[in-house]
Length: 490
Image (cartoon, rainbow, N blue to C red; front, side, top):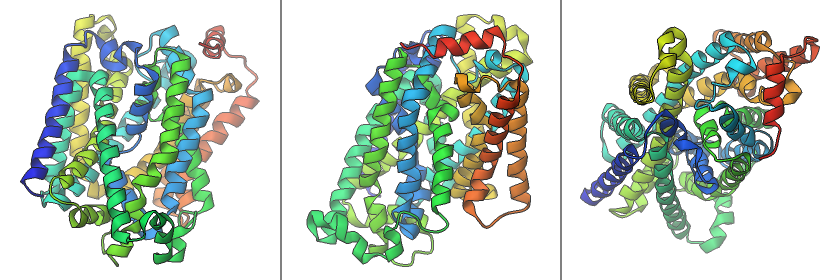
């Protein structure tokens, strides 16, 4: 990286901190801090949901898969996410917005106290917080690796730089700072992605036909929809996991719907996010698919995208690309910190310290900022030790994807009247069995990636649904009323 690249990157950080400072004066209480006052318009909520759904890990872990396995990364990741969010737009997203309107929730786990009971809510809150520490730490490690490729800066320096910038602007500005930064980050990402797309087309020297002829220069299996170990079975597993994740099982994504002004607005936001997932990654991944043509037999495929940027882009544009990668990561890590902070301060700490239930609005805002600060520090520590968890891919796929399902299933299906027979006892049983399945697969590994990643979710799903159907005890009037109200339009 040259001086101009560092200037562009610095300007990007200044933009982030400026928006955070602007939002600081707009945030008056914890509702503003966690849900932007419930006033997000559909286009801003949709873009934020999309941008918050992936990070710099796409340009490291997923770029490595695109290098070695080709088009299958789009099929089992972007396509399944797009379909999942589209389904969620009609069945799940509006219910999140109605929850805030009807119950005044600020965290995605807050409603679980009424839907199930206190033990179930606490189990999901605690386990989910732990999982997000690993997930967010993996994403910080990913962007640090990219910075190392671009500039030679150490992984430690990269983690600390990204982590502390994220911590500052999300701690002072809350969700409002996060969503407006998402909009700026989306613009930067589109500019950077289109730039790389055009540059690679030019380098291939086939004009627009290069979109198709690219695959003739690559191994035949790279153009296939499924490429072992990313089989059809694995794609189906990821479709299920992504549905539970992107419809709100990943808490920061639920917050985008919770913060919408109505169920209809949340629905439109989800449809916009879905369309972006189906279309934009085809352009974004194109340079990653082409990487083996320019760099054969890389010992570490995860650095392929960074090498292409350094090789083909002039000074200044390198900084723009790196800014877009930072943008992706900071969008997700900051929104994670904001939402997990809501769960900690609204659902965990008041149980541990009952006096916090009577806390004033001003002190509630201070608590919100303090828990955000502490969570971000924990993710930084995890990122610095990511090698102990199987590296970036290990953290994001093997840990987060496998552990997400068991806690997301009671959260998402608990919103639907069809599953009203599944009570708190059944929810806890499904979570514990899913987590036990994860532990057993770590102790006794299997060769199939689909089984390894999908089994915890499948076990939890079967126990939650089948036990709910067999349960003859009617839910309480409070649960019946909650589910009835969530099903109403508006």
